[in-house]
Structure formats: structure tokens, C-alpha cells
Image (tube, rainbow over the protein chains, first blue to last red):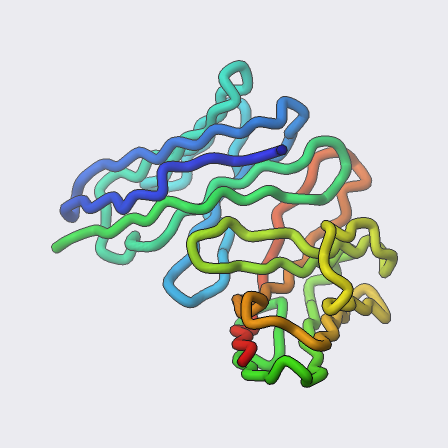
Amino acid sequence: RKEVEQDPGPFNVPEGATVAFNCTYSNSASQSFFWYRQDCRKEPKLLMSVYSSGNEDGRFTAQLNRASQYISLLIRDSKLSDSATYLCVSDYGGATNKLIFGTGTLLAVQP
Amino acid sequence: ETGVTQTPRHLVMGMTNKKSLKCEQHLGHNAMYWYKQSAKKPLELMFVYNFKEQTENNSVPSRFSPECPNSSHLFLHLHTLQPEDSALYLCASSQDASYGASTEAFFGQGTRLTVV
């Protein structure tokens, strides 16, 4: 079974903290990777794509390790508004257009 | 404002009812999807349509029947559902993956379905 696995949390961190989420995927043929954010009772929204070379968007840094089939998301200087569930996503591999979602990691940033 | 619109937002139906969920995307995408999200479970892919053709039916029971009349519209027809079908049903769209890697999916706000 092709899966994406994440620690469900919750991660409770104070404002300003740095927090890291990790994720593993089982399908070695996966080519596309993403982090989505889902607020309570809302739809998932793309946070960032994950590239082999690693990529950064403001306070957020995503990394991919193909050899270990491992994806990470680092959030620096956490804000209260970062509180949400973070979903790790890979695809089925090839031009399938099918995405596999992890169960998500819940982040609660405390004042 | 979302580029993917779903209606209704909330639906309560009896087990003998027939209802339909509607999804419309304004992003010019060629692929559309239905996902199911239940509590404590990952999003489950139900159906995939590429260029209006169904390319994936992920072992979904026949009481769920999708319809894709064109690349912008997607329906999910519901008939004789069970209480365990209660969940958030999410529609999504993306560019097709003709050129290799899959592209990100954009989601509608979902229909929260309760089967009583």
C-alpha cells in the first residue's frame, strides 16, 4: 500500500519557536511532493511545493531526501496564525495526477 | 474567493434519499477529483477525471456515482448512503500531468455530509 506517514501531533509550541515536521513516503516512484495547510473545518490549501534542492518561502523551509524517502517542513518564528494541520503529500509516481495525503500534523502555537 | 466552488456546503440526508453534490472550477484545469475526509483519517481519493474522462475509481461503492459533463463541472450523485458515509467531501482540480510530474491540487470548501 502506498502511504505517506506523519506524526499526528499535536505539537504545542510557544510563539517565536522553531518547529519541524517530518514525513516519510513509501512509493519510491513518487515525483511530486507538497505541504498543504488545513485550518479547522476548512479545505486544504497549498503551502508550498517541495523540490529536491530544498526550497524556502519566508519563514517556511521544505526539504526532500529521495534516498531516505523523507520530507520535512521547518517553520521559524512561529505565529499564532500558523496554528493548523499540516498535510504532507506525494504523488503516485509518473503522470498519474493522483496525490496521496498524510493524516496531517496538528500544530498549536501558544501565546 | 476560491477558484473551486462546491455546493451545498452542508447536507443532511436520510439513507433512502438521493442527492447530488456539485463542483465547479474556474481555473482552466483539465483534471478534477473527489476526495473524502473522515475524522482521524487521511484524505481518500475517490474519483479522478482527466479531460472529462474518468481515469480512476478507487474502489468506491456504487452508491457514489460521479458525473463530469465538461472539464469545469463535476458532480457526485449519492443514493442509499450509510451513516458511515458521513464525512467532508472535497472537490479539487489541477492541471493534467501530461508532461510528467503531478501538479498541485486546488480544493473547494467541501460539503459536510451527514447521513441519518
